[in-house]
Amino acid sequence: MTGLVVIGASYAGIQSALSAREAGYADSITVVCDETWLPYQRPPLSKDFLLDVTSEDNLLLRDETFFKKERIDLDLGRRATELDPGAKRVSLDNGTTLDFDKLVLATGSRARQIAVTGADLDGVCYLRSVTDALDLKARLAQAAEVVIVGGGFIGLEVASSAAKLGKKVTVVESVTRLLERAVCPLVSNFLHDMHLAAGVDVRMGESVVAMEGDNGRVTAVTLASGTKLRADLVLVGIGGIANDDLARTVGLKCTNGVVVDEHGRTEHPDIYAAGDCANHYNRFADGWVRLESVQNAQDQAKAAGLAIAGRHAPYDAVPRFWSDQYDAKLQIVGLSARHDRTVMRGSEDDGKFSVFFYRGDDLIAADSINRPGDQMACRRLIAAGVSPKPEEAADPSFDLRPLVRATDKANVARRNL
Amino acid sequence: MARIKFILSSGEKEDVEIERDVTIMMAAVRNGIRGIDGECGGCLDCATCHVYVDEAQVDLIPPPSDDEIELLSNVTAFRKSASRLSCQLRIPPSISELIVYVPESQS
Image (cartoon, rainbow over all chains, first blue to last red; front, side, top):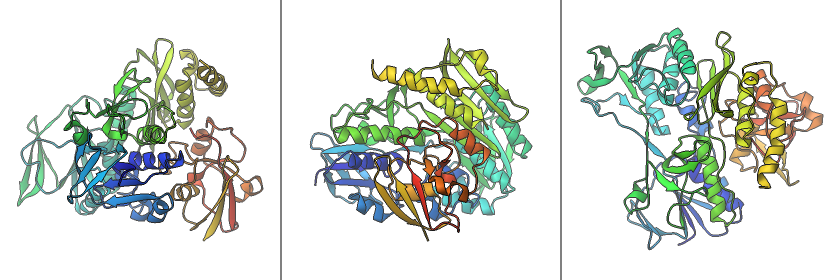
């Protein structure tokens, strides 16, 4: 069998298959995935799913009928074990092989494991897949004292859910502020206060040195300071690692993920990668990045799918992220690392504000709490390279919309370059 | 069950039968309606499920929340008075067939 083979059936995998089909790819398409679930939504796993607001059924994104209609074969519960780029063949864990004309690696990322004594105790959990989420949900129902290791997105969202469920929650973070790599200090502090107000104990600048247990079950977490936190459930959220092994072991270039161009293509002309497992040059970062987000997975996979079908539309979207904790809607657009100044829009006191990041005169990113309108405007402004003056941005009554409308003209000019 | 008639920007029409507790966005994603992404799954973060409700039916559905209005303020496709985020729409009992137009682009 030849045609397109996709490894991974989450956002990037399915999108690449669908985009290829939509753009006229006529050969067979086979999607292989080591999970047994039909493609499902991941963002609710740390939030509404744990709270029983979203049911298992509602997580599902597509059903068998849909894939049949699109002539996409799903091979679920099957892990790809080996890649032979020369023969253009993938080996699966049941001993069979799949020959491909084009291949998409959409293998995602896995949770970084914590390397301390007692990390293998029962009750020490991670959250990545729906299987993890079902397990975590069942354990949360029984738990009283929950320790969260890591003040990143997963850790804080689970902390928020667990606090809503009435659990005693402690968050342990080794650096000096929450979400340090993702948001500015102001947003970190705002979220920190929200967690405190919800009764969550937040321990900053503390690292975990051991987990203790009784009869194989976790009972406490020991910190470097000597503090011992009682715990009957521990959720570790200390980052993700790209699943780039298939490519790396055969010498395809990998640097924190499979290195791809703007069409999701690896060094091999017929092998593509997209989503969490891929590393690409992003003009909004002015550098190479590996992003873990639904937006990145879908948009990058779209570019890959189109390229596979012979149509070219390079991946060039402004990165964006979101998180919901308590009543705060956190949204992030752009990549702020290179900023040299920030401008505050709105006020922390009424819980609605944005922080605009500038590099020189250019707006490069914005973090917002409960100001979705700013995010929508900034998405288009940053994409078009149109910046409000910092003093305009700082005035919450300054209407960004006329500027946004001007971006339509800027986009036309860019296309004509 | 109720029906949604999606009218794509190409003019193509697609009918989808749904339960009334399913949002228009989910129905679109599950049935592969082109032009509705629904990235965030309906938590009012991404605004990638923008649609225009048929003018004659706009008043038959509950109005948008403040967050939805803010998100709609700068969508990439033309904003109309009938613009909605389809993740917030379900078919009310008074309607047996809801007609929605899919815009040319999403944010």
